[in-house]
Length: 403
Ligand code: RFL
Image (cartoon, rainbow, N blue to C red; front, side):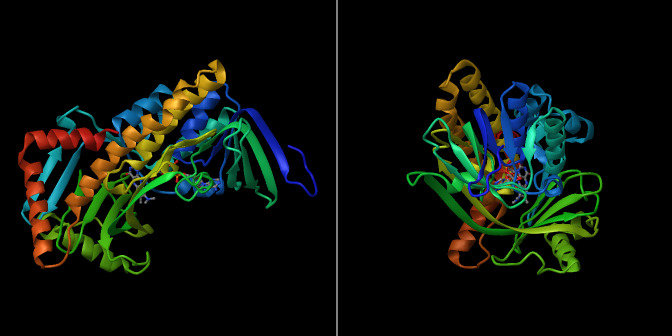
């Protein structure tokens, strides 16, 4: 890199890849590229401590674990993750359990907090000599239709710089620079599901040995184990609610009411460690390639957390993109890059379809008008099918665990 007083500093990775973002997508991609001797650098807007502590996903599908295994990235999750294969639905008609590991393709989830996976990926990337710049914000991707695309960045000291490479991988999430740099013709399919969740991380052991989905007239509530000491809960709330609007006692009382603790047992309470408000939204960008710029993970498509697919799609897309970039850079075989967008979109739309189905299963209108009553009766019937029909359960198992 060269310093200049009036012009931005420049850095050239002319034979390699600039990866934007050090989330699951960017770090899986970076690790695989590094293993194959590809010159790459990861640019990350946040400080390292922030990246390592950002709690989000926790349920990894069997296919995700297989990909991580194939690339030697799964040691931590095998050591500390836990296998999981049951969910419990609690409704006004009673409760039922779905042991999805015993159904369909007999696959399980591995419960492993996303921030632990990110720490493992980071540690490995840096230990192997990978280049990662924290506190370096990508501002825009330029010249994507050329063979030397550029990324304009603000470096950790606040100064501007320009990085060039052969390819740019936009793994910088939904608000990143890759999305902002797309040409006008890019299609964004977007849906706001009109539902808002208060996402909570509690310093408390799980209250049951299953993922809990409570369908209640006051709104949805969810329970998901993270570790033996930390549990994620969700509470459906009014659109516009702020994260700190609810006092802790009110949160626990409402969770217990919706999870029907009087009938099925109390929740194990503890201090709330983190809160966030999540408006359930989905979007998919099309295509996922613009010349030398490729999108992966949340940058490619956002999926509501109702079906726990986001991190799994991010890993899958990163692995597909890595393979295609390696072929292009080492054998001049660009077939994988040409097929990348269409291949990913098939997986993305399948996951979106299931996530959309889950949103419909877990939420209903609160009104007592004819349309609301009709919708809620359909939902009741859908839950009854899931409780009683083996073929419905097989379908659920296949889509719940797979990507
Ligand atoms: P990430 O993890 O957002 O990482 C993007 C990285 O890019 C950085 N960045 C930039 N860097 C440089 N320049 C810029 N201009 C930049 N702009 C952003 C960011 O700092 C960040 O480090 O995206 P990635 O890698 O695509 O991974 C996606 C997943 O994080 C996401 O899909 C999941 O967390 C979604 N999700 C879940 N997915 C699951 O598979 N299972 C779950 O159980 C699950 N639970 C969840 C979730 C998401 C949640 N939130 C965020 C709504 C629970 C919650 C509460």
